[in-house]
Image 1 (tube, rainbow, N blue to C red):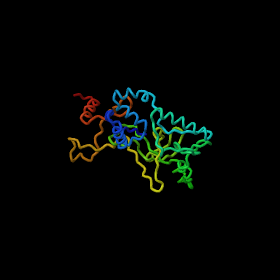
Image 2 (image 1 turned 180 degrees about the vertical axis):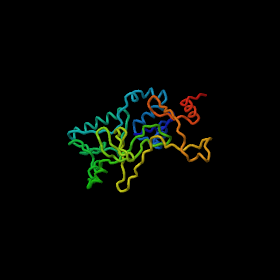
Image 3 (image 1 turned 90 degrees about the horizontal axis):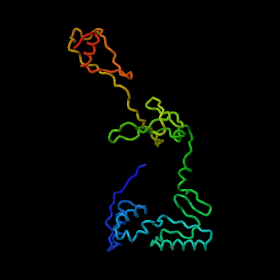
Image 4 (image 1 turned 90 degrees about the vertical axis):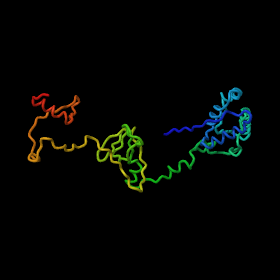
Length: 273
C-alpha cells in the first residue's frame, strides 16, 4: 500500500471577505483532488489567524461530525422527532446540508458498500457480483490459474536504482502453510510466504517466466602466456609444480593475485625474497 500526500498551503484567513476566501479554498481543494472533509478541516484550521482561531476555539476543539448521518427510527412519528433533533444539532453548530444529497423516508439505502434496512445490512449486489459470477474452473489448467499458480518474489538484496521490488513471475510447485516450493529456473527452492505476492496473469496469453540471475563464481578465463614460454614449449604439458592450498578460516579457497603467486611458490620450494 502506498501513501501519498498533497502539498497545499492556503492563504491566511481573510477577515474582511470570508466568502471569497472560502471560494478560493474550495477551488484549491478541487485542483488538488482533496475531497475528504476531515482533510479540508485541517487545512482550514491551519490557515486561520490568531483572532479567528480564538473565536472558533469551541468548534475547533470539539468539531461536529461531518460524515454521512444515518437516522433510523421504529415509526414515522419517531423518525420525524429524530430528524428534528439532528437538525437542531446541526443548526447549533452552524452547519448546513445539501438537499440534493439527502434521502428522506426510505426503507433502505446504500451505505459503505452495504444495503442498510430494518432487517440489517447486506453487501450490495454490485459489489459481490464479481465474486458470484466468477467462472468456475472446468479443467486442471483453469483450476491451477484459480489457485494462483504463479507468484512474484520480493527482492531482499540491495537493489539498484529503478530496480523492481519484486522479481518473477515464477511457477509454484507446491503451496504450504508457511512456505511455498517455487521453481526458480529449473531449481526448486522453498520461499517464505512473507516474500511472495500472487501474480495475476492473463490466461489467454502465454506466461513469460523470469529466469533468476546465475549465482556462484564465474568460470575462470585462460591467462596470458608467461614470459618464459616459447614457441617450442607452447602446447606441451607444464612442469609439475607444488602449489600450496590457501584457505580462509571458514574453509573457502583463497586465490592470490598473479604477482603474489610466485612469492607463494618460492615459500613452498624453500626460497626467499
